[in-house]
Image 1: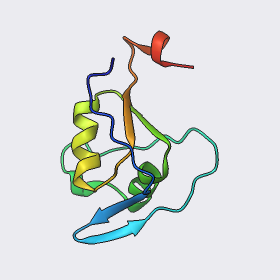
Image 2: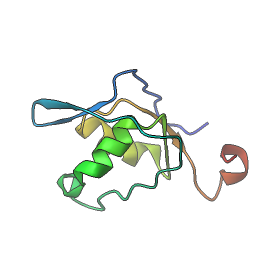
Image 3: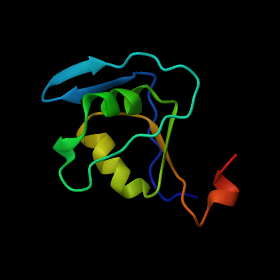
Image 4: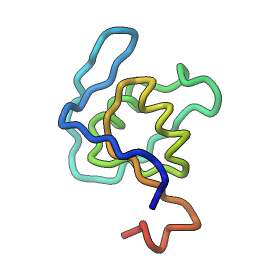
Length: 91
């Protein structure tokens, strides 16, 4: 479907350097997270915590988002959502 690997874990955390940081639980809602365009190190701690705590990460390109998630040890399910599949993938 989306062409990207689906990695899921019950562990909700992210890693900076060699330090694993647990993510606080999120309330039920839609969270929009801005991600860096070039340098992955430009992402905010709040963005990392939100991605790590989410049940699912919907992204325009799972291949690009997977690089970011793997860089910070975030093991969430990523699914593609963009203008070409919005009718199928959307609510």
